[in-house]
Structure formats: C-alpha cells, structure tokens
Amino acid sequence: MAIDWALFQFANGLAGRSPILDRIIQILMNDYALTTAMVLVLFALWFSGSSLEARERNQRAVLSTIVAVLLANLIVKACNLIFYRPRPFAYHEVTLLFYHPSDSSFPSNAATVGFCIAASVWLFNHKAGFLLYTLSCLLALARVCGGVHYPSDILGGLLVSTFSAWLVIRKWHFLDRWWMAIIHWLRRWLLA
Amino acid sequence: MLYFVSVKLALGYLLFSFLSALGILQLVATRYRLRGLAFLDHAQHGAKGYALAALLIVCGALLFFAGQWHAILTPGPAGSELAFLFGLSATGALAVTCIVTSIVQKRRPGFLTQAITDQGETVTVGRGTGRLYLPHNLNAPAPAVVLVPGLNNNEGDLTILAHQMAEEGFAALVICLDRGSCLYPEVLTIVPAAISMLSKRPEIDEQRLGIVGHGLGGDLAIRAASTDKQIKAVAALAPVLVEVQPSLDLLREMPYLEALRWARDRSRANLRAALNALEYGSRIAPRSFLLLYGAEDRLVSRTPTEAWQAQQATSMRLEVIEGVGHFDLVKHPVAVRVLIQWLREHL
Image (tube, rainbow over all chains, first blue to last red):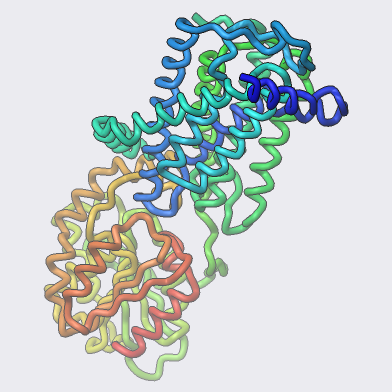
C-alpha cells in the first residue's frame, strides 16, 4: 500500500503544475475521448482486412470483445458489492482534475474496459491490440494523474480485464459457433 | 432505464460519435477500397478519402469537446448509456453512408472513356439485335469476334472494346442482350445465331471467328464455344464460373444498394448454374482459350477457378491484371492490350 500511495503521489504530482498539462490530462481522463477512440478502433476493425479470412478474424475479435467487456463489468460490479474502496481524494489531499466519482475506486472501471478491449483484440490482431493497449495505458495513467484512482485500482482493472479476455477467447470456444453464425448472417446483408 | 443526466451532453455525444463513425467508415473505405462505402471515388481522388475521414473525426471532436468542455468534466451518461448512444450513432452512420454512396456514386467512368461516334451497323442476331463494327480499310475478309456482355448492362463498355478491336483490324459484333433473352435455354441460341450471321458476311473470314464474353457473358461464351467448332478462339473476361458468396467484398465493386440487388439476384445465379461453364469449358481444347481476370475482382471466386484452370489443357491461358476490378476489366488498357494481342496470335 505504501508503494501504491507513493506511486499515486508521484503521478498526481504532475497535476496542477501547468495549465497545459492539466488540460491534456483532462482530455485523456474524461469518460468520452479515449473510450470513444477505442470503440472507434473496434468499429474500424469490423470492416478491416485484406482478405475474407483476415476480416473474419477481426470480426470475431470485435464480437469476443463485446462479451469480454460485459463479463469484466460484471466482475467489477461483483467486486464493488464485496469491497468498497474510497477514492484517493476522500481521505487525502490530492490535486483533482475531475468531478468527484462516488463509486468504489477499486478496480478502475475505465481501466477495466480499456484493457479488456485491448487484451481481447490483441489475442486476434497484435497490431490493433498494441494501439488499443497504448490508448488504455494513456487512459489509466491520466486517471491516476487526475486524482481519481490509485495505481492498484488500475492494476486490478488490468487483471480483471485480462482474465475476462482470456476466459472468453481462450476457454469459451462454444462462442465461436455463434460468432460464425452472426458473421454469416451479416454477410448476407453485405455487412460482414 | 436510460437517464443520461444531461440531455444536451447526450445529444452532443451522439453527434460526436456519429461524425466520428462516418469518418471511420471513410477511412476503412479508402484503405480497403470499399467503393460502396466511400463518398469519394478512390480511383479518382486517392488520398482525399483519408483527408475527408480526418476532417469528419476532427470536426466531431471539436464540436463536442470545445462546445461542452465544462459539462464533460461533470457527471454525465453512464457507460451503458454511452454504449447505447454509440451503437445508435454507428448504425446511423452506416445507414447514411450506404444510402449516400448509393445515390451519389455512379459507376467509375473507367480507363478508356473516349466518346464513341461510330455506333456500328445494327444487325439482326436471331431474335435480337447486335452492332457490328468493321475495320476501316478492308482489303481482305477480316477475322471477327463476337462480344457477349454480362447481365450487368456493360454493353456500353463492350462497345468501347469493339471500337478498339475494329481499329486493330478485327470485325467485332456486340450482342445486345435484354433481360428477356437471358433466360435459359433461350440464351443458348444467341451465339450460334451471331456466328451464323457473321459467316454469311462477305467482309468476314469465316475461318477466323472468335468469341469474347464478360462476366456471365464469359460463361455463355465458354458454353457456346464448347459445342460450336467454328469458333476458333475463346476469351472469357472475368467469367463467373463458380458462385461467389456475398460479403462486404462486393462493396469493392459497387455501391451498397446495387450490391445488395446483385447478391439477391437469383436469375443470375440460376443462369450461371444452368450454363455450367466449368463443365463445358473442358471441351474447348485443343482450341485456344484465354481466361482473363482483374486481381481486384470480387464478383468471381478465383481460387476454385485457378484450380480448375491448372487441370485443363495447355491451350488454356490464364492472365490476371493487377489493380483491376470486375467492371473495369473490359475498359482497362492493359487488359485490352493483352486481349487484342492474344486474338492476333490465336485467330
């Protein structure tokens, strides 16, 4: 916990020093910018691929990602029911660049969604996965710098999301048949 | 239940995600040459598609973030509500893109776009008609080629090809197909009628008759040549041969609504099956047979066709023209050059 607090202090120490840096952190940490960018990558991935096989792999990645994100959110909800961790600003003097979220700090919801999208896509497409991991890391880092999460919240989100992606893609093989049925149906409408 | 916290913020996000999704669709349409999703024709405008995509995304982001900056840093819609809004925007953007591209995009003008003033001689071919293009300086009977269009109204494209052939010393007869004449088995009477008509013309060398078909017209050309020994050379340009499964790839060739109609056209699929050109194509040997495809053609299934070609006699030649799609093939200068050169050698 001491390391967690020390890392938080270091990251949050970047906030409040420069208006430009604060604005950059706010752009990165808000609920709309990077999350929408990641979903747009997924949207692009659906139509991407030089061959039918490559596109089918990308489309399976998109469908698997949706399920993995739903599962990860369920796990986060369950965690929140069992364990409530107050936000860093609740008991400490922090530089807050965002509004006061009232839900549990652990695990980070935004990091869970971001890393879950990245991990799911990475298992199918390393290039797009790397781009999504980069965006997720920026989001996670900005959330800590902005004062709404401890680094351990991000780590918790990373673990939950990686587990969800691994379970859905590597273990739930029955989903593949559903994905193929959906993709084949959409192909009839020239949408896959 | 959807609550959104702030309706203004939710509407702003809806617009932002709609414009961004439009931009992303333009990006992938340009990158993967999906002309059915592209507002700008990549063949003519190239990188402008990327610029348009960037413009849409940047405009969407600026409108939202600059316009509602303070609201963005306050509690807003929940994650599930944002997902709902994004889904709505993306679906809307896809629908708008498909409809707009179907309206604004005409078929590409193509590579050979010279105005054809010589409309040829209208001749009777069986129950239908055709247009005959003769070489200008005829000193001796000329070799002749019957040009069979597909069912996609590319008769105009074949007219350009016929004109080129006439300039190269070939007589070219373009068959005018109407929808009614494309029924099986009536369609089988067209080529014999054309060959019979050409054989009776004094300007034509009846020993040097060939046939060229495009698309499903290629299938018909193969089928006709398999039984008519008078045909000395057969060139099938992008024959369908094997039914291609509909997918997003069709949008590389045509706008969405046109592609959807093409995919659902059972009469085309039935005619292809009835013509069974794969089976009949094996009977053309030892006569010369050219299969010509565009590398970007998404209306034919090339893998089984190439496997079939590998099993055929050496008199069959396969040529693939890089960077050319289905409809462009008969207009592409490289394809036209290859075809005319091959006809010179084999007819």
